Image 1 (tube, rainbow, N blue to C red):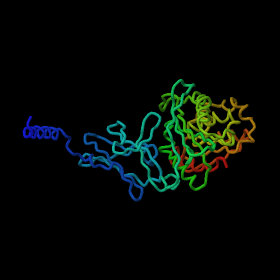
Image 2 (cartoon, rainbow, N blue to C red):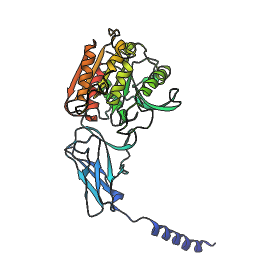
Image 3 (cartoon, rainbow, N blue to C red):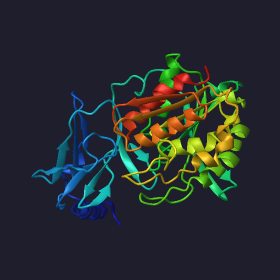
Image 4 (cartoon, helix red, strand yellow):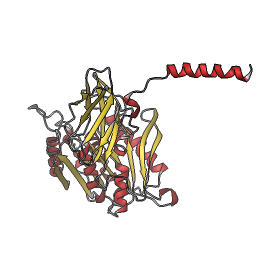
Length: 376
């Protein structure tokens, strides 16, 4: 084909492609999330065919039941929150009852059975990304003999770990029932908190292991079977870490803590193996079922009896037994009863009640309070 005859063909093809190209919409330039100077947050989503859109979040104050968004004339729905404290927050949109992530925001946080969109509000020097030396948070896959499959955990190593031969204390940090092994390092900001505390010389360098506390599918309303995870933690997670990382293996260099489900798991791991740990912490949790709910008698009155011999073990090496719970937390009575039971069995328990409830607004603060107490 001669060159002059090619030009009309190319032009015709281009015209066809342009005709098929989607027409511009407000979504092309939409800023889905805007953090204002007073920490109010404006959310927007383009959904011109939707009849109802709500903003949902696990931790933004006032959004637990969903904030109704208002439709603008251009098909964009929007809502603005009240001022939000500094920290990281998960959110999604419910479009006609279907939860969707924010496709305009690349920041995400994995939970147990879903993923959330994520944003961060600056203003807390210990949670923000600062100009300090940074450690590394790695996704680590390991063979679980207990479960017969590959599993994933997140592992934080401190700045300079790759360039030396030193051995480090180890801190096992467990998540809650709604979360995954990703949660502490995404919405929990654990890596940044560790970096910033290290830079201020408030903590010792340490390796932090964040395993997956669920061994199978789980949804709200189902009972929590934590025994399988406890076996896997003892037989697989700890053995893998201590054979693949430079770990100081004495109890005074080993700590464990967790929030909610992870706090209950902490007690079910640390009490039977008390000789292994120098420190343990329980955030917004305790022995599940130790007190009744809604006027019902205790569902698990035998835990203390089951662990009678463990509770009677020598505690002289135990440097810290630490609890913290929000005054409005639905597990506050569980925490109080667990603390009383441990004190009755000779444990020197530090117990703090903070404002607020069962939320990452508290759990990040608890981590900031707990870390400087370790390995001193």
